Amino acid sequence: MTFVDFADFVSTPAGRRATKLLAGKATTLKQLFGDVYSAVKGSNANRGGGALRTTEQLCGDRMWNSLGIAERRIVGMCLAYQVSIKAVPLTLHRTPSGKGSRRYVELVQKRGV
Image (tube, rainbow, N blue to C red):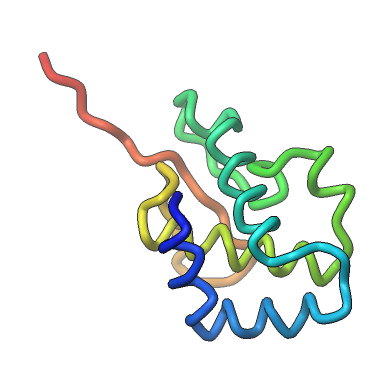
């Protein structure tokens, strides 16, 4: 993740909404964006298995439980953006109905034989 990724996120509709949701809070959007990246890169998602995981599971109980409702929504927006630009090795799992919490699965990397 680079500063450019963050600057690009801030200019998206989700980034602008996240900025408004954080108005008046001690946590900065840049801090949350970096925390999400670090948490996901260090999570079990990068260790195989192909299990579906929610944002909460990817970030871990320690981080998730320290966040308020607005921050949790922002963390979801940050993760969705990072997945969309392939900054983290995950892909969005789409259910046939499109309902329910977003879940992510590790990208399968082909290994040379």
